[in-house]
Length: 242
Length: 249
Image (cartoon, rainbow over all chains, first blue to last red; front, side, top):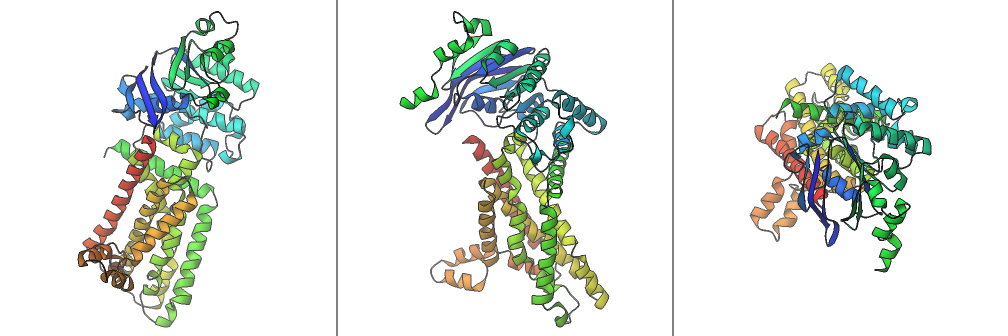
């Protein structure tokens, strides 16, 4: 469903993404790991067509995101890193906007809203204004927006960020269920999440893929995934010394 | 333009309008707009003292009134999207950037049209007290709406330049102020001293005032219409270039 070929992104002299390639099939959940500033969000922004790559190619469902963005974007549901929502709307208003942009109208739209409100536990705040919501609710409102059209491809930038442990668990269950018939990429800092949810994980550091495989393969000789993670990435504090 | 484009524009415009009316902004704006209009028309314009059956005392203030009110209404359009990060959401949805630009512009323009329409008591007063030229009043309203649209298009453009609403407001006021003053004699006299004639003429041709004045005389001239429409198209096109630049950087 998703293919990424030799993706580069330069911001001035800084190489944010430096030759990343991978692909994700339908029914597969790919975990995206890496320290802060490794290029995870930039890569996701290029896959979703928000920013154009300096070079390289992304296709989603066979459509090139640069040349044929609209059909590609129709297949994608996207949760950006900061989970932005329109704060001057109610949760219901925001979700019906998202549904209408995706071409859902009338009763189909209302059914879709009811479905995602259930999946993301938003019943209690459905008619509340978005700017009065707590961080967790706001995050789930944006997540709900990304799945409202039941997309074939889900790109989630830290979907469990800002949630309490119960909610994290629920979202992971949701991802696992979705993973059966969708292609999912999600980024996270939480290594247990990779063990719990992913079929495959990629670790990126400083714009490059430094490791890739199933969680078990990645762990290799190491008892814990985080030991392996530390062995292949450079920490923020070490980088400052460079 | 396909029906899908139209539907996308409508969806964007509807969201923008819902946002306006969910916050106090819309109501505060309309009340201030009407109060200022009343003040300018009746206190400064001497509407009754003139003893004329027309709306000149009303329309003549609009370029100045809009100078501050239109940028205030439109400054948030893109700046807020950039600040909150919803720009990323909007531009990864299956809509083209130009559809979003046009949708937002039309929503805000419709809102300004609503505020302008609520000044109808002034028009009905004239009709009640005298026997005005109805066609002239309609031309005046059309001109006023086009002027608001041109200012708004400038504001949409400056709003895309920054994530700060205040900067977007100030930039827009300055540009609109230039559009008012460009053809004014003290300004052209200043230029005549050192600039070649063609330059003075080019600067003067940017002025909205002669085109606005045409409508206020009750004349619907195609050239005036074309001036306002091309100003809007140019600014909205520039907005799309700015947005593309943002994503490329």
